[in-house]
Image 1 (cartoon, rainbow, N blue to C red):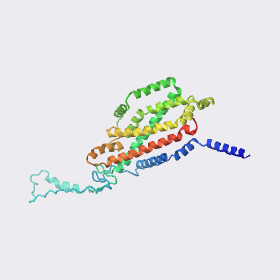
Image 2 (cartoon, rainbow, N blue to C red):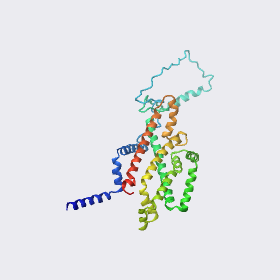
Image 3 (cartoon, one colour):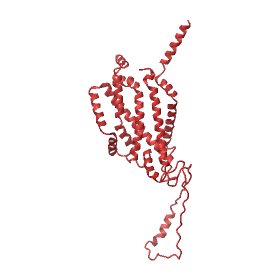
Image 4 (cartoon, rainbow, N blue to C red):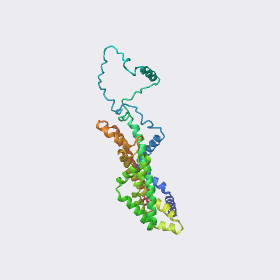
Length: 352
Protein backbone atom coordinates (compact mmCIF):
# COMPACT_ATOMS: atom_id res chain seq x y z
CA UNK A 1 0.00 0.00 0.00
CA UNK A 2 2.75 2.40 0.97
CA UNK A 3 4.71 1.59 -2.19
CA UNK A 4 1.65 2.36 -4.27
CA UNK A 5 1.27 5.73 -2.54
CA UNK A 6 4.94 6.51 -3.09
CA UNK A 7 4.62 5.49 -6.71
CA UNK A 8 1.61 7.75 -7.15
CA UNK A 9 3.40 10.66 -5.48
CA UNK A 10 6.44 10.09 -7.66
CA UNK A 11 4.30 10.03 -10.79
CA UNK A 12 2.62 13.29 -9.75
CA UNK A 13 5.99 14.93 -9.13
CA UNK A 14 7.27 13.74 -12.52
CA UNK A 15 4.15 15.06 -14.21
CA UNK A 16 4.54 18.42 -12.49
CA UNK A 17 8.20 18.58 -13.55
CA UNK A 18 7.35 17.71 -17.15
CA UNK A 19 4.58 20.31 -17.24
CA UNK A 20 6.98 23.07 -16.27
CA UNK A 21 7.21 25.62 -19.07
CA UNK A 22 10.37 26.03 -21.10
CA UNK A 23 10.89 29.68 -20.16
CA UNK A 24 10.01 29.04 -16.52
CA UNK A 25 12.61 26.28 -16.34
CA UNK A 26 15.13 28.48 -18.15
CA UNK A 27 14.59 31.30 -15.67
CA UNK A 28 14.97 28.89 -12.77
CA UNK A 29 18.35 27.75 -14.08
CA UNK A 30 19.38 31.30 -14.99
CA UNK A 31 18.55 32.67 -11.53
CA UNK A 32 20.71 29.93 -9.99
CA UNK A 33 23.72 31.31 -11.88
CA UNK A 34 24.99 34.09 -9.60
CA UNK A 35 27.41 35.50 -12.18
CA UNK A 36 24.73 35.60 -14.86
CA UNK A 37 22.25 37.20 -12.48
CA UNK A 38 24.75 39.88 -11.45
CA UNK A 39 25.53 40.53 -15.12
CA UNK A 40 21.82 40.88 -15.84
CA UNK A 41 21.52 43.50 -13.09
CA UNK A 42 24.42 45.48 -14.59
CA UNK A 43 22.94 45.29 -18.10
CA UNK A 44 19.54 46.41 -16.79
CA UNK A 45 21.21 49.33 -15.00
CA UNK A 46 22.78 50.36 -18.31
CA UNK A 47 19.41 50.02 -20.05
CA UNK A 48 17.79 52.29 -17.45
CA UNK A 49 20.61 54.80 -17.93
CA UNK A 50 20.17 54.66 -21.70
CA UNK A 51 16.40 55.22 -21.43
CA UNK A 52 16.91 58.18 -19.11
CA UNK A 53 19.46 59.67 -21.50
CA UNK A 54 17.11 59.15 -24.46
CA UNK A 55 14.29 60.91 -22.58
CA UNK A 56 16.59 63.82 -21.74
CA UNK A 57 16.47 63.25 -17.99
CA UNK A 58 20.24 62.75 -17.70
CA UNK A 59 23.15 64.02 -19.81
CA UNK A 60 20.81 66.42 -21.59
CA UNK A 61 23.31 69.29 -21.60
CA UNK A 62 26.38 67.25 -22.48
CA UNK A 63 27.37 69.87 -25.09
CA UNK A 64 27.29 72.73 -22.58
CA UNK A 65 30.69 74.06 -21.54
CA UNK A 66 30.24 73.94 -17.78
CA UNK A 67 33.89 73.88 -16.75
CA UNK A 68 37.21 75.33 -17.67
CA UNK A 69 39.06 73.61 -20.54
CA UNK A 70 40.40 70.21 -19.45
CA UNK A 71 38.96 70.63 -15.96
CA UNK A 72 40.39 67.87 -13.74
CA UNK A 73 38.18 65.42 -11.81
CA UNK A 74 36.91 66.51 -8.43
CA UNK A 75 38.88 63.85 -6.58
CA UNK A 76 42.12 65.30 -8.01
CA UNK A 77 41.36 68.92 -7.25
CA UNK A 78 41.69 72.11 -9.30
CA UNK A 79 44.75 72.89 -11.31
CA UNK A 80 47.31 75.10 -9.53
CA UNK A 81 46.94 78.77 -10.35
CA UNK A 82 49.47 80.08 -12.81
CA UNK A 83 51.09 83.45 -12.28
CA UNK A 84 50.15 85.93 -14.97
CA UNK A 85 51.99 89.16 -15.65
CA UNK A 86 49.68 92.11 -16.18
CA UNK A 87 50.40 94.44 -19.11
CA UNK A 88 51.41 97.82 -17.87
CA UNK A 89 48.99 100.57 -18.84
CA UNK A 90 50.77 103.27 -20.85
CA UNK A 91 51.01 106.63 -19.13
CA UNK A 92 50.39 109.95 -20.78
CA UNK A 93 47.59 112.22 -21.99
CA UNK A 94 44.80 110.85 -24.17
CA UNK A 95 45.16 111.92 -27.78
CA UNK A 96 42.07 112.93 -29.72
CA UNK A 97 42.22 111.28 -33.14
CA UNK A 98 38.69 112.17 -34.22
CA UNK A 99 39.96 114.63 -36.78
CA UNK A 100 41.96 112.03 -38.67
CA UNK A 101 39.96 108.84 -37.89
CA UNK A 102 37.23 108.31 -40.56
CA UNK A 103 35.26 106.01 -38.24
CA UNK A 104 35.18 108.42 -35.31
CA UNK A 105 31.59 109.61 -35.99
CA UNK A 106 30.34 106.02 -35.77
CA UNK A 107 31.90 105.19 -32.37
CA UNK A 108 29.13 106.79 -30.35
CA UNK A 109 26.45 105.05 -32.40
CA UNK A 110 28.15 101.70 -31.90
CA UNK A 111 28.43 102.25 -28.17
CA UNK A 112 24.69 102.89 -27.93
CA UNK A 113 23.90 99.72 -29.87
CA UNK A 114 26.23 97.65 -27.73
CA UNK A 115 24.39 98.72 -24.58
CA UNK A 116 21.20 97.14 -25.94
CA UNK A 117 22.68 93.64 -25.72
CA UNK A 118 23.10 92.30 -22.22
CA UNK A 119 25.80 89.67 -21.99
CA UNK A 120 26.19 87.54 -18.88
CA UNK A 121 29.36 85.66 -18.24
CA UNK A 122 28.78 82.38 -16.40
CA UNK A 123 31.32 81.19 -13.89
CA UNK A 124 32.83 77.90 -15.05
CA UNK A 125 33.73 75.17 -12.61
CA UNK A 126 37.37 74.50 -11.87
CA UNK A 127 36.66 70.78 -11.40
CA UNK A 128 34.00 68.36 -12.64
CA UNK A 129 32.92 64.96 -11.20
CA UNK A 130 34.99 63.01 -13.74
CA UNK A 131 36.78 65.89 -15.42
CA UNK A 132 36.14 67.92 -18.55
CA UNK A 133 37.30 67.81 -22.16
CA UNK A 134 39.24 70.46 -24.05
CA UNK A 135 36.10 72.61 -24.36
CA UNK A 136 35.05 72.24 -20.73
CA UNK A 137 32.21 69.77 -21.33
CA UNK A 138 31.45 67.24 -18.61
CA UNK A 139 33.17 63.94 -19.45
CA UNK A 140 30.72 61.92 -17.33
CA UNK A 141 27.74 63.36 -19.21
CA UNK A 142 29.48 62.61 -22.50
CA UNK A 143 30.14 59.02 -21.40
CA UNK A 144 26.46 58.54 -20.51
CA UNK A 145 25.29 60.00 -23.82
CA UNK A 146 27.94 58.02 -25.67
CA UNK A 147 26.68 54.84 -24.00
CA UNK A 148 23.21 55.53 -25.35
CA UNK A 149 24.41 55.86 -28.93
CA UNK A 150 27.05 53.10 -28.96
CA UNK A 151 24.81 50.51 -27.28
CA UNK A 152 21.81 51.48 -29.42
CA UNK A 153 23.86 51.09 -32.59
CA UNK A 154 25.30 47.76 -31.47
CA UNK A 155 22.00 46.24 -30.34
CA UNK A 156 19.95 47.48 -33.31
CA UNK A 157 22.57 46.35 -35.81
CA UNK A 158 22.73 42.94 -34.10
CA UNK A 159 18.92 42.63 -34.20
CA UNK A 160 18.81 43.50 -37.90
CA UNK A 161 21.69 41.15 -38.74
CA UNK A 162 20.03 38.40 -36.67
CA UNK A 163 16.74 38.77 -38.53
CA UNK A 164 18.52 38.64 -41.91
CA UNK A 165 20.74 35.72 -40.93
CA UNK A 166 17.96 33.67 -39.30
CA UNK A 167 15.55 34.10 -42.23
CA UNK A 168 18.13 33.31 -44.89
CA UNK A 169 19.64 30.47 -42.87
CA UNK A 170 16.23 28.95 -42.17
CA UNK A 171 15.20 28.96 -45.82
CA UNK A 172 18.60 27.77 -47.02
CA UNK A 173 18.85 24.94 -44.48
CA UNK A 174 15.24 23.75 -44.58
CA UNK A 175 14.50 23.88 -48.30
CA UNK A 176 17.94 23.26 -49.78
CA UNK A 177 18.02 22.70 -53.54
CA UNK A 178 18.09 25.78 -55.76
CA UNK A 179 17.09 28.04 -52.89
CA UNK A 180 20.01 26.81 -50.81
CA UNK A 181 22.42 27.14 -53.75
CA UNK A 182 21.34 30.73 -54.42
CA UNK A 183 21.73 31.72 -50.78
CA UNK A 184 25.10 29.97 -50.60
CA UNK A 185 26.25 31.99 -53.62
CA UNK A 186 25.18 35.26 -51.94
CA UNK A 187 26.92 34.16 -48.74
CA UNK A 188 30.15 33.33 -50.59
CA UNK A 189 30.12 36.72 -52.34
CA UNK A 190 29.97 38.55 -49.00
CA UNK A 191 32.53 36.25 -47.41
CA UNK A 192 34.99 36.67 -50.28
CA UNK A 193 35.47 40.36 -49.42
CA UNK A 194 37.38 41.24 -46.22
CA UNK A 195 34.85 42.40 -43.64
CA UNK A 196 36.67 45.62 -42.72
CA UNK A 197 36.92 46.65 -46.40
CA UNK A 198 33.24 45.89 -46.89
CA UNK A 199 32.35 48.07 -43.89
CA UNK A 200 34.50 50.95 -45.17
CA UNK A 201 32.99 50.63 -48.66
CA UNK A 202 29.43 50.80 -47.32
CA UNK A 203 30.39 53.68 -45.02
CA UNK A 204 31.77 55.68 -47.94
CA UNK A 205 28.53 55.17 -49.90
CA UNK A 206 25.92 55.51 -47.15
CA UNK A 207 27.61 58.35 -45.26
CA UNK A 208 27.82 59.26 -41.59
CA UNK A 209 25.08 59.00 -39.01
CA UNK A 210 23.71 56.64 -36.39
CA UNK A 211 21.15 55.10 -38.75
CA UNK A 212 23.78 54.67 -41.44
CA UNK A 213 26.08 52.76 -39.09
CA UNK A 214 23.21 50.39 -38.15
CA UNK A 215 22.51 49.67 -41.83
CA UNK A 216 26.20 49.19 -42.63
CA UNK A 217 26.85 46.75 -39.79
CA UNK A 218 23.63 44.78 -40.40
CA UNK A 219 24.37 44.35 -44.12
CA UNK A 220 27.94 43.23 -43.48
CA UNK A 221 27.49 41.14 -40.33
CA UNK A 222 24.71 38.64 -41.10
CA UNK A 223 26.90 35.94 -42.65
CA UNK A 224 28.02 34.29 -39.40
CA UNK A 225 24.43 34.01 -38.17
CA UNK A 226 23.34 32.62 -41.55
CA UNK A 227 26.01 29.92 -41.57
CA UNK A 228 25.23 28.70 -38.05
CA UNK A 229 21.44 28.81 -38.40
CA UNK A 230 21.61 27.01 -41.75
CA UNK A 231 23.66 24.20 -40.20
CA UNK A 232 21.22 23.87 -37.30
CA UNK A 233 18.20 23.74 -39.63
CA UNK A 234 19.84 21.04 -41.76
CA UNK A 235 20.49 19.01 -38.60
CA UNK A 236 17.02 19.47 -37.07
CA UNK A 237 14.98 19.10 -40.27
CA UNK A 238 15.38 15.31 -40.23
CA UNK A 239 14.70 14.78 -36.52
CA UNK A 240 11.72 12.87 -35.21
CA UNK A 241 9.82 15.77 -33.68
CA UNK A 242 9.90 17.62 -37.02
CA UNK A 243 8.77 14.51 -38.91
CA UNK A 244 5.99 14.02 -36.37
CA UNK A 245 4.85 17.61 -36.93
CA UNK A 246 4.85 16.96 -40.67
CA UNK A 247 2.82 13.78 -40.17
CA UNK A 248 0.04 15.62 -38.32
CA UNK A 249 -0.19 18.22 -41.10
CA UNK A 250 2.00 21.08 -39.89
CA UNK A 251 2.99 23.46 -42.67
CA UNK A 252 6.57 24.19 -43.64
CA UNK A 253 6.49 27.62 -41.99
CA UNK A 254 5.12 26.05 -38.82
CA UNK A 255 7.84 23.42 -38.76
CA UNK A 256 10.52 26.04 -39.40
CA UNK A 257 9.51 28.74 -36.93
CA UNK A 258 7.35 26.93 -34.34
CA UNK A 259 9.28 23.70 -33.98
CA UNK A 260 12.89 24.09 -35.13
CA UNK A 261 13.58 27.75 -34.29
CA UNK A 262 12.68 27.50 -30.56
CA UNK A 263 15.04 24.54 -30.25
CA UNK A 264 17.97 26.53 -31.63
CA UNK A 265 17.12 29.74 -29.76
CA UNK A 266 20.17 29.34 -27.53
CA UNK A 267 22.40 29.28 -30.62
CA UNK A 268 20.77 32.45 -31.96
CA UNK A 269 21.09 34.23 -28.60
CA UNK A 270 24.75 33.38 -28.23
CA UNK A 271 25.54 34.45 -31.78
CA UNK A 272 23.53 37.65 -31.30
CA UNK A 273 25.45 38.49 -28.14
CA UNK A 274 28.70 38.06 -30.04
CA UNK A 275 27.35 40.27 -32.83
CA UNK A 276 26.35 42.94 -30.32
CA UNK A 277 29.82 43.03 -28.80
CA UNK A 278 31.45 43.02 -32.23
CA UNK A 279 29.18 45.74 -33.59
CA UNK A 280 29.83 47.99 -30.60
CA UNK A 281 33.54 47.64 -31.29
CA UNK A 282 32.97 48.28 -35.00
CA UNK A 283 31.00 51.45 -34.23
CA UNK A 284 33.81 52.61 -31.96
CA UNK A 285 36.34 52.07 -34.76
CA UNK A 286 34.19 53.81 -37.37
CA UNK A 287 33.54 56.82 -35.12
CA UNK A 288 37.21 56.94 -34.14
CA UNK A 289 38.14 57.15 -37.83
CA UNK A 290 35.46 59.78 -38.55
CA UNK A 291 33.16 57.40 -40.49
CA UNK A 292 30.61 56.75 -37.75
CA UNK A 293 28.21 59.12 -36.00
CA UNK A 294 27.79 62.74 -36.98
CA UNK A 295 29.88 65.53 -35.51
CA UNK A 296 26.97 66.74 -33.37
CA UNK A 297 26.68 63.30 -31.73
CA UNK A 298 28.94 61.60 -29.22
CA UNK A 299 29.87 57.95 -28.84
CA UNK A 300 32.63 55.98 -27.22
CA UNK A 301 34.54 56.17 -30.50
CA UNK A 302 34.45 59.96 -30.74
CA UNK A 303 35.49 60.21 -27.09
CA UNK A 304 38.51 58.00 -27.76
CA UNK A 305 39.39 60.11 -30.79
CA UNK A 306 39.31 63.30 -28.72
CA UNK A 307 41.18 61.66 -25.85
CA UNK A 308 44.13 60.90 -28.11
CA UNK A 309 45.28 64.52 -28.24
CA UNK A 310 44.33 65.15 -24.61
CA UNK A 311 46.37 62.20 -23.37
CA UNK A 312 49.55 63.77 -24.75
CA UNK A 313 48.96 66.73 -22.43
CA UNK A 314 48.36 64.44 -19.45
CA UNK A 315 44.56 64.68 -19.44
CA UNK A 316 43.59 61.02 -19.14
CA UNK A 317 40.06 61.21 -17.72
CA UNK A 318 38.10 61.17 -20.99
CA UNK A 319 39.97 58.05 -22.11
CA UNK A 320 39.33 56.41 -18.73
CA UNK A 321 35.61 57.23 -18.76
CA UNK A 322 35.01 55.80 -22.24
CA UNK A 323 37.11 52.71 -21.50
CA UNK A 324 35.40 51.96 -18.16
CA UNK A 325 31.88 52.33 -19.55
CA UNK A 326 32.66 50.18 -22.59
CA UNK A 327 34.50 47.45 -20.66
CA UNK A 328 31.83 47.10 -17.97
CA UNK A 329 28.92 46.87 -20.41
CA UNK A 330 30.60 44.52 -22.88
CA UNK A 331 31.80 42.16 -20.13
CA UNK A 332 28.43 42.08 -18.37
CA UNK A 333 26.57 41.52 -21.63
CA UNK A 334 28.86 38.63 -22.61
CA UNK A 335 28.49 36.92 -19.23
CA UNK A 336 24.72 37.35 -19.35
CA UNK A 337 24.59 35.81 -22.81
CA UNK A 338 26.62 32.80 -21.65
CA UNK A 339 24.20 32.27 -18.75
CA UNK A 340 21.24 32.50 -21.15
CA UNK A 341 22.87 29.94 -23.42
CA UNK A 342 23.22 27.49 -20.55
CA UNK A 343 19.65 28.11 -19.39
CA UNK A 344 18.15 27.58 -22.85
CA UNK A 345 20.34 24.65 -23.93
CA UNK A 346 18.07 21.80 -25.13
CA UNK A 347 20.40 19.23 -23.55
CA UNK A 348 19.80 20.79 -20.14
CA UNK A 349 16.05 20.82 -20.83
CA UNK A 350 16.15 17.08 -21.59
CA UNK A 351 15.14 17.53 -25.24
CA UNK A 352 18.27 15.92 -26.68
